[in-house]
Length: 390
Image: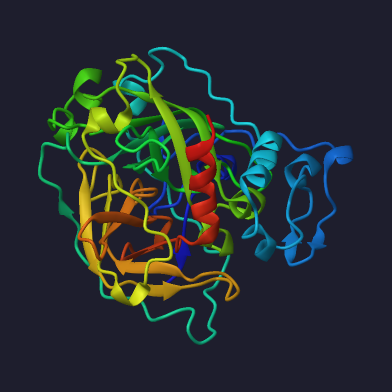
């Protein structure tokens, strides 16, 4: 596989660079804030020395509060019940107070990316976990209007600037027909290792539905967010990402997924699903050999501008792994770029329904392919928790 890159915005800003990949896009000065300070270090009394707990290798310097409630090994995580996820969430509180009218067209505007950074991990080479890269597929624009599409954009504030990703309205098992759940990438909601959840986290369905901001034109908020701005109330992501996640592609990206529960800033009494008119179920443990995948998102690095919804019909995905003990990621040929991260990957289930089977996590330096996590037990448990949690 070619070099793999992925940007966690806060870490990239702290390092003074943003990665030219299919990840979150900066929304601030061109190339990000070159003078942004690194996240504040944890105190010596509150950090862990590293080492291992069972099958989990712990990076040094993590706040001990981050490690409270970890299972003895990542395999044990698959045995977690609702109460276990609830205890973990209580130790990692998501706080996202609504700041009325915080997001406006200027803050949603896309910034130019800076130069890419080198990769930090190589794909695993064991038989059956990583395949040759598939041929590149050229993304095509999704026809407007976007009003019935489950796709949209996520916006957030991070250290040194603001970022955006792509996301998807998914069905809520506990509230059929009235879902307020959104699926995206973990790195679109949380900084990863040693970090915290992002702030001012919102979802904008049918972003730029009319094309009013296309071609560099200025557009009012009513055109950019025709179905409103939806603030996140709850977020769940994988413990693997929270403990291990970093600024470039590695084993943590094999669990790079997140689910948000949102509400409309201007309460209309309708759920997100009722407002959008669309929500897709999540297909866990989908049979790889039977999948024909289409990935959607709002790429913003040239030749894209972040204002149009695109898709890649990638066909049957191949495998990519950084850790052979974890489920291999799905990989498809696609030239979508930074900003497409978190966007949904769709496939047709045996009953004919369209379902979400992954989300964009990382991409190659040359924008030739995208990879997303394979959604199995841990992802299913996370959705179950947030669906049941009120």
